[in-house]
Every structure is written in structure tokens, then in C-alpha cells.
Image 1 (cartoon, rainbow, N blue to C red):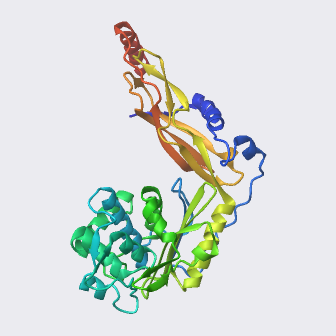
Image 2 (cartoon, rainbow, N blue to C red):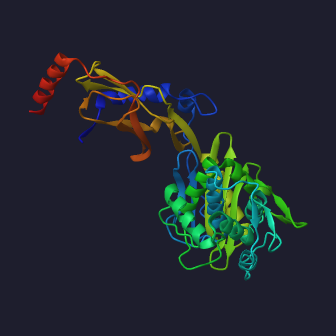
Image 3 (cartoon, one colour):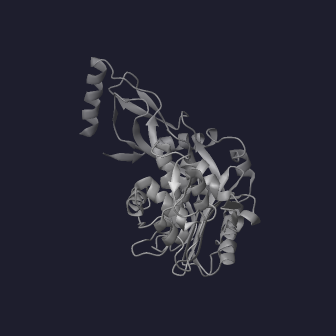
Length: 401
């Protein structure tokens, strides 16, 4: 299909960029125009991490990172994937939070084996509520609880790992593969900083109730209270998750997320040198992102972004817009530098259904696409009468010659 950038519509887009802008807490166009651009210094790159990334939650934009697609051992951050699968199975009605989950001998032994192991403390060969097992895994990072949940959901940890990989593919985690539910080092068990950020974003978006377990600071099992290992929960009130990890192979890892106002960021550091260092590095990234970037809502559903000629229709024009809010993360003070453009099929021919995708809108900053979305028909355009179709068919033929 042929496409074109409609030059005449560029002016319409510029107007749409202003008229679609929502009031505070997102900055209004006038305020953005009056604000001098804030210089954006380089991100405070973690000095010893093997890989790291900072991602905007709303748009999925990567604000900074290094080795973001390098496959590494994720340690206990694996349990976020386990939590996601359990939450999905709960939503699908296959399990309930009141289910009684057995702490099998395998889960009890393998979950705490070796110096990298961590127990939740549930007694062996006894059951506990699924919700308590979830908390023991998320808050205490219990390997035994992760295995017990896997066995309850899928019958075995091996079968559960297949579910993990299936859900990971749906999330878009293209460079990840899981072989267990807890994250102890195993051949073929790997992911990337980028994939983990995608996972954190999906967890917040899809299962906020389960995600909320990760901000609980301590949990008691069998009269033993253990603290959450995420030090950021004590350092910054805006941090509400998400998961630490550590093995001798993986080093110290942390997937963290914070929300300030309406803006949420997700940071991942992998292979850091200490528990303190991973917290220091993560908080520095979060602070940098909140300080130097802001989210703009450019277009809202139902608002006209552009109009396009329609051939053989009862009307000659179709109004185009977006089906979902189009958001973009940009450096502070750079709102007026955002450059929208559209790509639309060269010849739109009726009938066109309401909501039908007919092109896309792109937003660029410094020559780089920072956001894009499908352009859909806001109004339906039915076929015109016989004479209108015949007349337009003639002109379509004429223009093609």
C-alpha cells in the first residue's frame, strides 16, 4: 500500500497537538512554551553493573541504559515472572487466593538449597493459603514459596516454567527464557534488563493488586518475621516495588519502580557489587529520570487529529484520530520541539468503518521517533450512490494515469 506524508495536514497536526493537550498535572502547552529547556545531563550510569535500563511506564520509552539486551542471570527477580503467571491464572479463574498450597518436600529442600537460597518459612508437608504463599515469595523472596506455587498452579515446576515462557512471549520479552520459578542459577535461565523492565511495566498495568505485595516492608511466617530486601522502600516514599535478586553468578540485581505525581518510572540494574550499591544506583536513575523528563498527553481518543479525502463515499472527508491516548516522554522544556506527522493510505475508498485503522501518526524529537499510534476513523463513511461511485472511479483512473 502506498503511503504519503500529508504536508497540508502537518499544520492541522500542529493545531491538534495544542488542542488535545490536557490540563495539569500534565503541563499545558502555554506553560511548556514559557518554560526554558532544562539541559539533560547524561544519566548517572551505574559504574559496576553488567546491565541497566531506565524506562518510562506510560510510554515504554527507554530513557537511558547500557547492555539492555544482554542476556544475564536474573536471580530472584525471576519471582516477578512467577507472580505474573500466578496473577494471570487467578484472573482466569483457574486458582483462587483461598486455595490451600502444599509446601512439598521438594519445594522445602530445593527452595533453600545452597548459599544463594532464601526460605519463606512455611512448614514442610503442610498447606497455607495461596495469598500467604504469594506474600512469602514477593516480600521475603522465598524460593520455597515460589516452587510450591509453581507446583500448585501447573502440577510441577517444569510445567510452570513453560507457562512462564508463554506469558513472557506475550509481554514481548524476546530475549528471556525461564527454567525455574525462583531464580537460582540454572543452564538456560536468563533474561535482559530491557525484558525485565517490560515485565515490571506489565505487572503494574495488568495486576496492580499482586504488584502491591512488593511494597510491604515485612512479612511473618511461622512466627518468623523477615524484611523486604528492597532498601529503597525505606529510602524513598515514592518507591512502591518491585524486586531484588542475588546469586553468586548474577551479582546484586534490583528492579525498582516509583511514582511521583502521575509519572511512573521503572529502573533495572543487574550484576551490581552489593546490596547498598544496587539501591544507590537505582535511586540515582529514578531521581534523574523524574528531574529531567516529563510526560505529555498529545492526543485523546475521539479528538480530531486530521481529515482525509475519501473516494466513492457518501461523504468526501473522514475525520481521523487515535483509539488510545497518545503519550510521549520528552526532556523537560522540549515540548515545542516535538514534530508530529501522519502516514495515510494514498487513496481511501468507502466504505470505511468507525474505528478502522487507515494510517498512523508519528511524533519525532531530534529526528528520532519517540511515539506513534494508529490513526483510526472517528466517523464511519458509507458508500456513495451509483453516480458518486462512478464519478470518483473516473477521477481515480485519471489520477493513476
